[in-house]
Amino acid sequence: MVEGTSLLRRHTGLNLYRGFESLVLRQKENYMPMYETTVKTSNGEQKERVYAANAQEAKKLLEQRFGPRNVPYIPHMIPS
Image 1: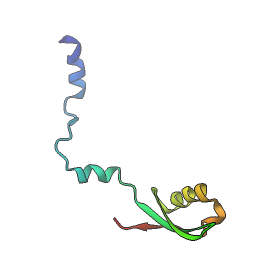
Image 2 (image 1 turned 30 degrees about the horizontal axis):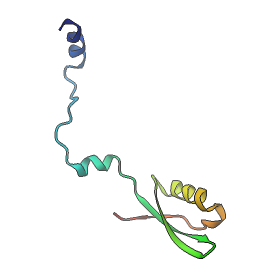
Image 3 (image 1 turned 90 degrees about the vertical axis):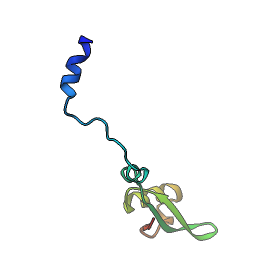
Image 4 (image 1 turned 135 degrees about the vertical axis):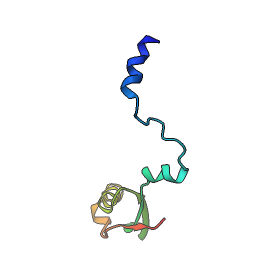
């Protein structure tokens, strides 16, 4: 066990084990809000939703999907 002792010495005092965390707390770290906006389609206008980090990213994702001219409005965040 001589090989592992230096490794243990280097990491002593570091709390590598996070212990019990509720599922809700762990999901907060990876939480990505949902944004909604009206887009123009061949069938008229419709509401579309995407998950994105912010409104600008949501608009960019929708513009990639529907084209820049078909996303005239800034998306707004849907409360969870």
